[in-house]
Amino acid sequence: MAARPGVAALLAALGPGEARLVGGAVRDGLLGEAVADLDLATTLSPYEVMRRCGAAEIRTVPTGIAHGTVTALAHGETLEVTTLRADLDTDGRHATVAFTDDWQEDAARRDFTVNALYFDPATGALFDYFGGVDDLAARRVRFIGEPLQRIAEDHLRILRFFRFTARFAQAPDPAGLAACVARANDLMALSRERIADEWLKLLGLPDPVPTVGLMLEQGVLLPVLPEIAAGAEARLAALVAAERAAGIAPAALRRLAALIPRDVAVAEKIAARLKLSNKARKRLAAAADPARVGAPRAMAYALGTEEAQDRLLLADRPREAKALIGWTPPRLPLGGGQLIARGLAAGPVVARTLKAIERRWVEEEFPEADRLEVITNEELARATAS
Image (tube, rainbow, N blue to C red; front, side, top):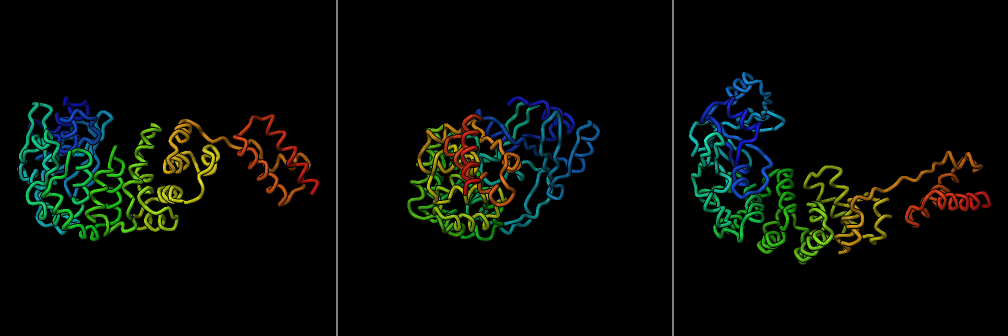
């Protein structure tokens, strides 16, 4: 896990021994996976972090300074630096923290052993206070401390347990699973945005099927997604297989559509409950629409390429979904003004004629200009004759 330029510059600015990489960056690096988020923990206060970074001409943003987090921008990299913390009080949704200089105390407040690993790129030292390295080797996701207590501190850990289990574990940790099932109703106390973020991350993993099946079997999702009914796991499995056959990347919203009834009203209700963005709501509703799945390019023209691929994959038509990769729906190279210029009287007839031309152009798979000219002449003749 060699230090990247931004990390090296930031560590130098903060001073020897004052900061270490923590969490996912260390975990994924040990697994030989690509490291995305770069988070550092430090013994320094957030104000001292900003002072030292400023002295080294590293720009900082106080993104979460009340909780000890400063974002540093170094050598084109965005890095979050958080002061070591200890929990003073938790209510399942929020925590009141105090800053500390005790690395193990900071590690103890983290959720799983595999997420409580620290690494100092300057010295190559790895710090593991709770057996996270052994758990990584065993492909085991295990709570730090007593699982029921850790979930009581932050209810989101229920969904995080399943997400990390789906990503890393060969089988769920029995104690962790039992605690998550016992405390599933605690999910109701969380904001819907936090639930949606964690749930969609889980669905976007390469193969969430076994874990989602386990969650459904144990009733973990009932408090927040009671619409997911029997047969949902099989539909999700079929979709994952279709995505792989088509060579199309996983899409969490598409997978959510596979789990819920094919009903636009239900999809919109779920999207509103999870407080999804308008764009995400439209995509989920389009995927859940029970309308007949038509010709691939015609659907892509009407709905958008992603939405058409969603419907095709959900209908187990991976070959046709694959054919849309890299294809951009064209625009009809014709407008109402051109029809008027060719003799059509202004008025509602223009829109009707243009619509008829467009319909035939789409049905014929977007033919070239010569064929479009024939279609246009025929529809103009019909319009003027009526």
